[in-house]
Length: 133
Ligand code: THU
Image (cartoon, rainbow, N blue to C red; front, side, top):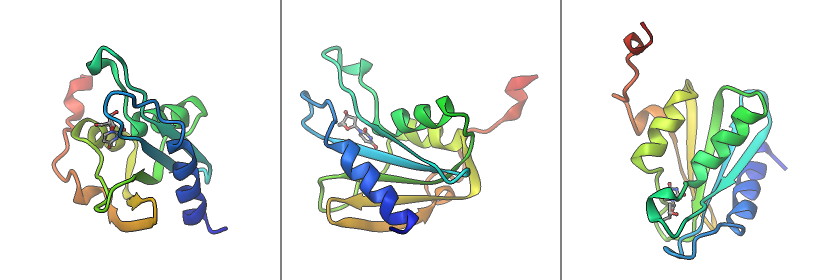
């Protein structure tokens, strides 16, 4: 399997474990770290709706927990005709660990529909390092 096919399979498979009883909208995410490893996540909803978490958030947390700090590629999958894009909060989460070449793959159950550079999504993301002063 090529790495992109593995990334698709990983996101496809974890999506089946989504906990989304409130929206009935299952999402899967798979990150290819710059170390060549794949990290996955799915959405986990909560009866207190704002406590729910996104698939991308879970995949990024797994990447960080395993000692990787850069996203080479991220793939998001849902069962939709038009592929979904990451929500605004997840774009900022991806931004934190994106490089200039980070690719975002948008997929539905049939496969990858579009692959774009991360900067196409959030070119003016908040990134002001003065907050660290
Ligand atoms: N969701 C994600 O997990 N990722 C996205 O990029 C968009 C939305 C989840 C959140 C919620 O559980 C469900 O999809 C419906 O919004």
